[in-house]
Length: 523
Ligand code: ATP
Ligand code: MG
Image 1 (cartoon, rainbow, N blue to C red):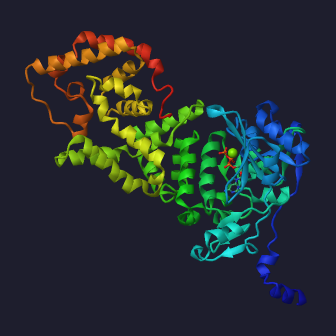
Image 2 (image 1 turned 90 degrees about the horizontal axis):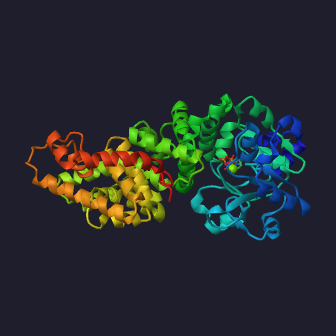
Image 3 (image 1 turned 90 degrees about the vertical axis):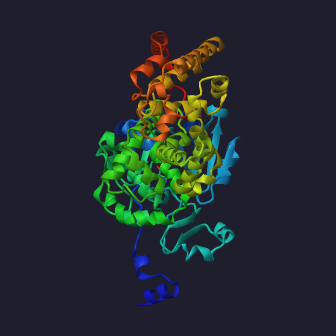
């Protein structure tokens, strides 16, 4: 009775007081049991852990890297967790930067330029008691500077807005999302520290949220997307979402409405650009979440079966699998191409000239589909260039082709055009021509341009043949009439005499090796 009274005075609700966090018991698993191959651990991550430990701190490789090592995948990056504060971490390394506001972490940088590697170091986070965290009721009442001063803050729905309270490792572990993401590996002793039966779940191929899944999705709705992503990534290894983890997914989906667009956009890119794009689309459909996560993602899922978009997603997965870079601008340009192409054709039908019609169609698409993200100048700029270069592939005379291959976005635009050819939207011979041209020396390039001019002159002199109407306006723009499938026989013969056609075919077999290499939208 007295305790109840004191709790009341202190403002503790009985439910909050009785809800004890499940911190889990610390279990140390030796190498003989977990079987991680120490050679697969990145040298720089080992170096970061060693430096921190030698300075007297606790430090471990943590999260996704431990998960991947355990299930036999090569981790794409390595994160380190420590009890040193960000300032203490920064002080131990020459090139280290404190980043983030919501979660302050340290980037320790090795190497320079394209080859540089970042090891992300985070300080153990304290258990977040939602009831005790400062409630920020209605964001508009809390100014940005007030929010910045708070260490822990949640909004009225329970979403965590600020989270920079440090705590012991057991509290850090309970804050992580899935049991298989909550293990710590010490490369020095080769011990895995496991609080939530992560090892058992890894062995039984179970993706399980730590704690009550619905609450965890409320705290951070992005975990909904992470659940889909890991399910997609790990499904080829036989992983399944545990029932209590997948159960609240659909009804939690509306919580994503409150997540900033930029974070959703980044999570969407992680779904699509980490090598499991097709599997992620499948997971979204299987989980009943084909719509509603993020408008642009809805479009991707909707169009994933269209040959052109399917080819782009497949190509992205292949490139990531081969360790090649991928650019979001390329994939998004592919996904939204149907809108641009249709808008372009529509405008041409109403009498607008081709170039301004394309420019206006692109603007329409940015307004309708990209919204806030259009503020990301480089992404939008790159997409625009890929699209604007498409009709220029038709101009294979004069100095145009020479200028084209010098454009910084040529590779991306070419790969885009190659996918259009693969999807049957334009003639493959056009793609072959550009591939050959881009790899040729100046003399051969000149020969190729001269040859196109000769062919065009021959076509002009040939007797006029009535042409079947194109299916849509852009097909006329996109396919040189003589190379279209529906072009009458006589015209095709007039356009490409047998000799040059053979020559191109022969060359293609040699040149094909370079097809798509070093590009696929890589910029
Ligand atoms: P990936 O292989 O894609 O990098 P990852 O699990 O390493 O997967 P990161 O985003 O790099 O994912 O996060 C590193 C770790 O931080 C996770 O393994 C998890 O323990 C923790 N974490 C990240 N995001 C969240 C989140 N939203 N909620 C709880 N824990 C998270
Ligand atoms: Mg990671």
